[in-house]
Image 1 (spheres, rainbow, N blue to C red):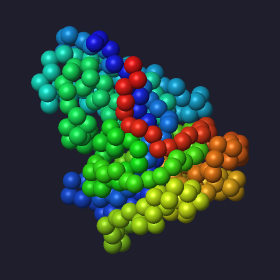
Image 2: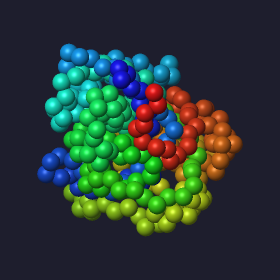
Image 3: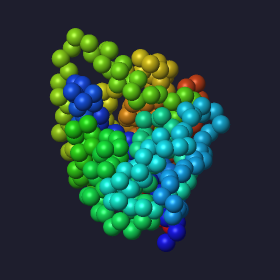
Image 4: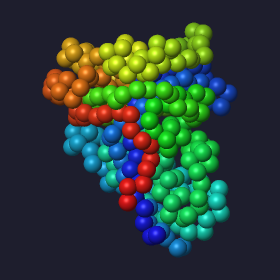
Length: 306
């Protein structure tokens, strides 16, 4: 086998509880992830010289000022390939080609998705034979969201988000994403969270029982009021115009409107495709909205497509 192509979904956080900063610099998290059908693709082609190279093609809306994507060994996908080499003693190399659709610096784990895809692709390409469970510690060393994106679906994340367990969830959900013209640094949003919480006792986060009950029921009307994000205040303080986007979505009848992860992408829960289209049309008028995307979830994690 000389080439493997892997598709990998974006993630959203149905809840994102953020606790105090830990000794290692990360924050304690309690989150419920869901993978959605907005996919990047990573093609891995065998090199016999042991080197790792990478190219990135971004399918981004012209109005989106995407942050520069590393096209060297600083790219998280390349780091994933190197980590798998080191863990398995593989002497082969790989040429990675990434087609990006997930918004860059948009709070949907696009870089982590590519890292998960690179692990799955290289594992297959090099014949290392590792299971998803065996890949998980390598994934966790790369980033908090990477282990979830190996598996996809709907899952709970604890620790700094890297400890993942499946969640019993019924049915599928219709989402609308409003992307912003400029990305937001995850580190900057967490730093703002710390600044806004100076002098406060930040409790250890927990996933709300009501959210878990709603997911078991599979009714979007029950799920909507349960969505939450503790980074909202921080994200909006850095990008106050996002509040207008959230309000427009709610006025259009969205069952819920929240910031996705660390932002600036905002997400809206719809009843069905037609309702999602209505929300999308309304969001198109939002000044801070660069693009609107309809999507569904949950979806599988990184998987071989060619």
